[in-house]
Image (tube, rainbow over the protein chains, first blue to last red):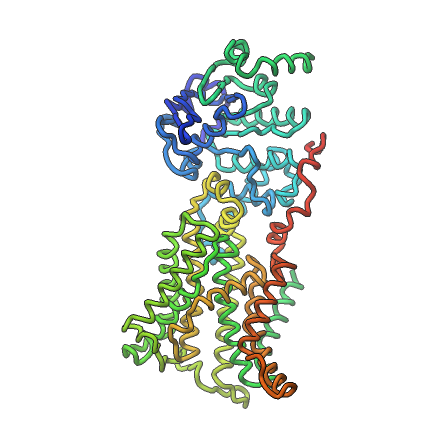
Length: 272
Length: 357
């Protein structure tokens, strides 16, 4: 695992998508999308509702198979089921939180460790020393991750009973437990207030500092523009702009499609 | 910790004394019933792996019971003329049933809920119909004169005297079944609290999220089918040796439903609850038997055949339990949480500024 800080691979591309197309019936949810996500960056994916952001996520995480096009992670073409893609290094969270609700926070993260651990049926039945050691390590690692996202004190609380913002953090911790190269976050700030969104932003930077690349779908434009190294804008399944936030923000097509009103609103509200 | 050991010892002592007390108070036939109750407990614990742990509704579970039973019946009876010892047939029964579990599970992997239930029900019936029509299994007549279980020179079928007491075979079988139930309980508990057990729980709760976290759900589901089936196979081997005679009629869909009821009524996923469910449902119907004498005495004739009445009361009890306690009589804390999620405050209401510090 390369835990190199960002900067080193600013030019190298971690995820490259070419010509991704996905149709549902006659509707093109994604139309020939090209995407290059630099290693170590936070990459924003924005666009109005129904633009195809989540569909793209589902393609990149193996839940949907694209009708055409390929994507590569670290130069390796990705194809297969969600678990294979997760094993290859793309972990995700969900727009509508999908935790294992009646398991504790710690157990949720331990499920995330499943992929990187090995003990099987007989190890568990016989309680072999190797299995017990692995179990202990898994628990320590899970606790570490919970501390990292800032909910370590809730380790033994049932996931469903956690406050909303903490559930979002728990989902991030669970995804991090799979040791991803690319962490794909689907609207992590949805439903959060300003304070929570700000701490979430700090958390994402902490994750980036560990060398993990982040793909971020977000509606909170302020968060995206402040945090992301690059931004891609989708509209009706097409990529209409791509670049560093400052350029994208000024792109007339983007302003027309989506940003205009919101940018004004946010600069009025948050001129500080 | 110390009190836990004490409780365990107490439980073991009670379980050991149970057949003697039952014999003295209720008569010998009830000891036999206890033996059956333990067989059902093992079956229910096996099905619990599939239904309770992994959340896969299996309505054909009795097929694996049949596989184990027929394996023993064919290889330890005059039917073919082979008399293999139990210590080879017991693991063979577990393995054979596990392979059946995996093979029958494989085509169902894409199915969920009702569809899975229908297909597994079909598989269960297919196995039974095969057993009924193959000459190898002696068709509907079944196989009899099956060897009693024997370890070394000790036959579980024969009477033995202990400290001057004359104990018939049902006692030896009781202790054998009790011991094996103990082993199955241990395995169930250890599995629940393991990497595999957590993965099963994750699949049960949210299959898409589980897949997205890198869980190979196909592999894990097959593992659950195989593991549950293995317990069924073990129970089947024991059943054949204990009963001495088996026929396809012992393995009807009604049995599958009964075992499922034990799991659901007791508390899916909770080992103690499942055992309680199995004991209750195996013994309760017998307790209704005197109702026929009662009817004879009060009305001068039997209005309702106790066998029918039994099923009626049984169904009624199940419906009531499912309405009042959908999580079962003795659920695991986890299951209770799953079924009472509306008791929690809305997550949105709990989201106030500052809580995440």
